[in-house]
Amino acid sequence: MKKVFFVFLFICSLSQAQSPIYLKDRSSNIPVSYANIWKEDKMYATSDSLGVFKVDEKHLNSDFKISAIGYKTTYFRIKNTDKTIYLEPEVIQLYEVRVVKRTNKDIVKLGKAKRGTSSYAVQFDDKTGMCAKYFPNQSNKGFINKVKFCATSSAKNRTVNLIFYSVRDNGEPDKILNTENNIIRLKKGTHVLEVDVSDLDFPKEGLFVVVQHLLLEQNKNYAKPYYSNAFFYEPSIAVDYSDRYRDTWYFKEGKWQKNNRFSINVEISISD
Image 1 (spheres, rainbow, N blue to C red):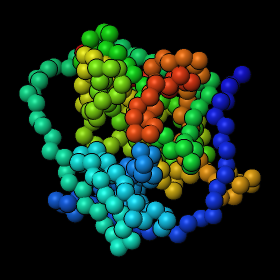
Image 2: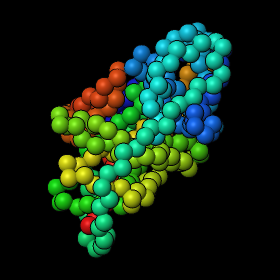
Image 3: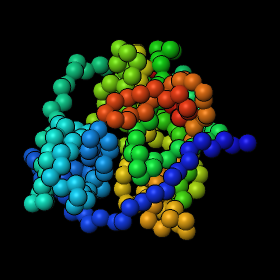
């Protein structure tokens, strides 16, 4: 029998007036999509495909951190007169080019993308946002071909982001390996999602596959008819329940922490 261990407590205050803020690239003036906005080490919002996020008026004149793949992390006090925030592109250090002929003859699969014993989503009042699954490189394969995971959505066009992290000496996620977002749009229902990442190296120390929930209006699932203004963020990601740490971490209060409750059901295929 499927065990559900996430109990959502839907308590919601009266809606607040919100101010739209636009994120743009300082060099090109183009919108910065799917950036993370943090307040007091908690995920506060995600910019949408047009680079827009909203701030409750009660939080104006507060300090925020803004992070986005390909850009320098920005610390910003958002005032009621601010309409646009410009982010500085991150200068990417180019390393020595490795010329390797890929054979793809010996493909190995690690992990499993299955429905699992339970699932998790993100509560509106506890915006953990990111969970990471560790994959060691025990077979010394050099490349990742595909990533699969199982997710459930009550409506179409829910979106989730896939990020890859290197491994720090203490075993936790360290630095982002991909140079752009991997945005996945879901259909309604439960599906196994497959993402082609054939241009990604598989480091000898392994890596983390990170599933990041995007705090967007289109991802909200309202708890009607019980509490008309309460919600959680979809999709729900399939996991297997655990009573100890296995391979999964979560990001909360500004740091990565080991997850002693579940393991995310993610599969990667690797090759020579």
